[in-house]
Length: 90
View (cartoon, helix red, strand yellow):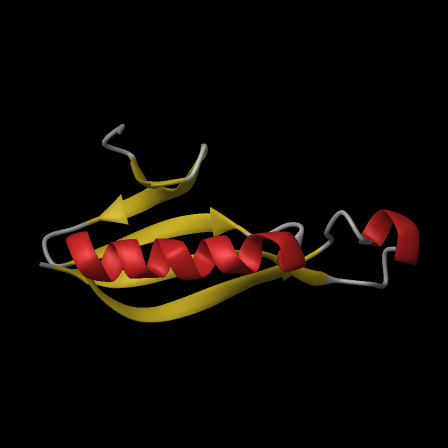
């Protein structure tokens, strides 16, 4: 596992979130959620891993904008591109 990612092995694949900030008490990791319906379960798995091994999840901040679905539905359609996971370090 690389230091700048939080990763968990799920079957034959790895679910990862990139750590974008890690201070003395608080860390923020970014997890891409596009396509949303396929990645939402992975978000749950990742949240469990953070709570188990890294610290207490404080909040999720959605990143709203154009997604892969926007190609088919037009640029007026926006969705959740990803989520910032803010957690307090153990």
